[in-house]
Image (cartoon, rainbow, N blue to C red; front, side, top):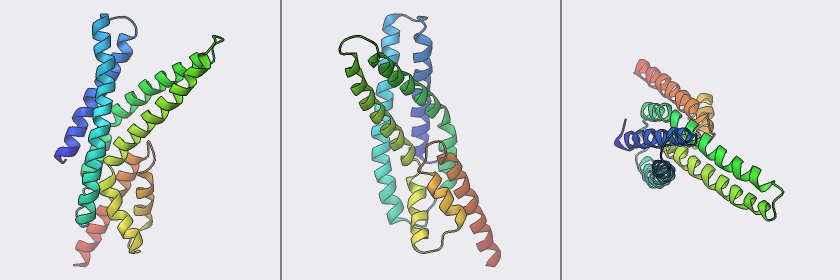
Length: 193
């Protein structure tokens, strides 16, 4: 696993831990200052992950365009599997926050409907940030297989795997399909040689 992916996994574990602590602290088990630290820690870790994902995604995009032969499906697959707890906790935190704001916007209080606007903005930003994180772990797989599609060298499994890399919850499955597809292609080439 590359340093970029290892740092992603570490950041995701920190963010997932803070997210779990956020749910535990909502029951009033910790002091108020610790609860504030956990809330700020989760949001800051999410912003750091999105910024890191954006920068490393662009670097991976440039590197995979310039070096089309190097495909690290195994590293991306391991990274995606290890980041599953982060994505689950991240979804739960953002869903709870946006859902809570949406429910509050329907209360019969004057002006409460205006809470729907920040809920929509927050929902779009959280989904967009999470998508940037997901895509950045896939970009070094997407570019080589898109190149194979344009050269008409791609097989059906590679195309299905590449499409799955763009879909939430199916990106790990797509990386697995590409890993199996790449493994089968290298075995066939070794046998032909």
